[in-house]
Amino acid sequence: MTRLAIITALALGALATAPRAEERGWQLAGALGMMQFVVVDAPRARDEALYRDAIKALCPPQGTCFLRFFTNSRGAAVAVPLPDAIAAEPAAIYSRSTKQGNETFQWSCRLATVAGNCF
Image 1 (cartoon, one colour):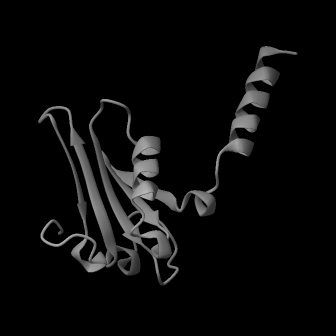
Image 2: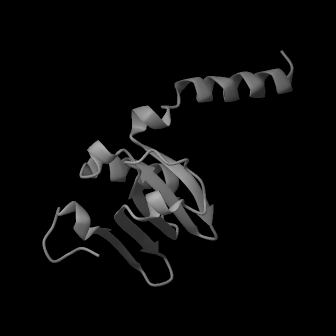
């Protein structure tokens, strides 16, 4: 087998075993600079494990990472810039700054998950 055939087979195998957005419960809409925009399934918007999974998949270990999470209850086409229907449904914000040495996760107040610690 040639090197190209091996690389292609490995890449296709990885794609075949990678969970689809529907199975994960989230999808990356896109990015603007360092900011990444993630759309989560509305019924799972309060599922902390869903956010941990997205953070683990999208943020480099020990690196700076900025994620903004939204739901899409109206089924708008997912794109960046976000359509108004999605932008109006913030779910959470995650930030990790290696420069500042901090990490924060904050829920949207509209989800009513934590009193006092929301935006």
